[in-house]
Image (cartoon, rainbow, N blue to C red; front, side):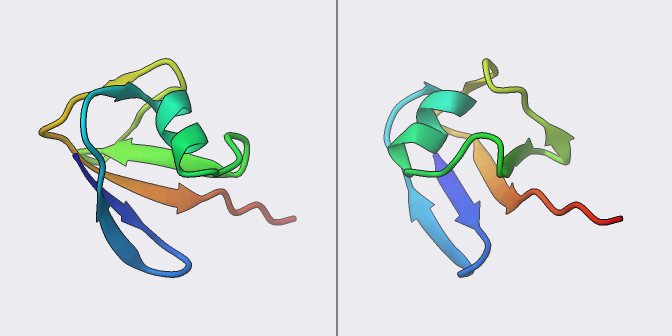
Amino acid sequence: MIVRLRQPKREITVDGAHTVNQLLDQLDLNRESFLVIRNGTLVPGDGRLQPDDTIEVRPVISGG
C-alpha cells in the first residue's frame, strides 16, 4: 500500500494488509496522535487496510 505522511511530507510503500493500529505501530507512530484516511474517509483503529490502498496519515490537531 502507498502511505502518504505529513511532517515531514513523504510517501512510503508498505507491503501486505494491516489494521490501522498495526500500521501505526510498524511506523512507530502514536495511535492517539495520528488519523488514517482512505478515499477521504477516516478509518478506525481496527479497520483493515488492503495492499492496493492509498492512505494518508495526518497528525491530530486540536485547538481551543
